[in-house]
Image (cartoon, rainbow, N blue to C red; front, side, top):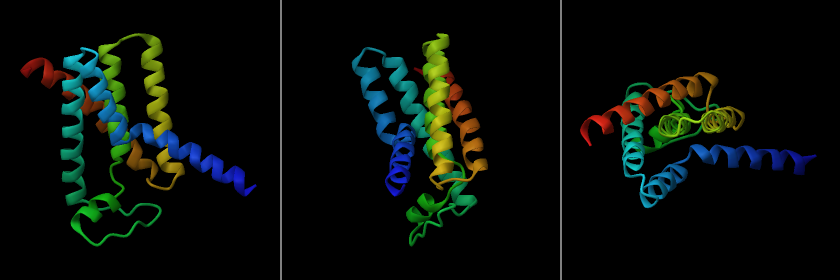
Length: 155
């Protein structure tokens, strides 16, 4: 039974990785190398906006993670704060930008499914409260739209 629980935890951890910075970085580099320059710029803007907004919110409002992560520095405090979910912001921003650039029902559905799975994984892994991922998801969609608009307007 313990092996099964460990496997389930590992699966949720792998799903959570879709909201990590590594996938965002890969998406930026891949889209740039494939010739989708505007898409890569939109993804860079999305990451920068996401970090700026999360740091601003977490500097003003601290909410302890469900797993009670401890910290000793300001940077540690940023990481120990659960509100809003950076993973949810990144993955919903990515899903929004991909859905706008490739508006096919299958791509939109898959993007939404993956983004939702990441949000659920963060709650199951006790890294976030439900409200953290809900607000993060909404912010991610808004940041995704803003990133597309900004790049179309200024680049």
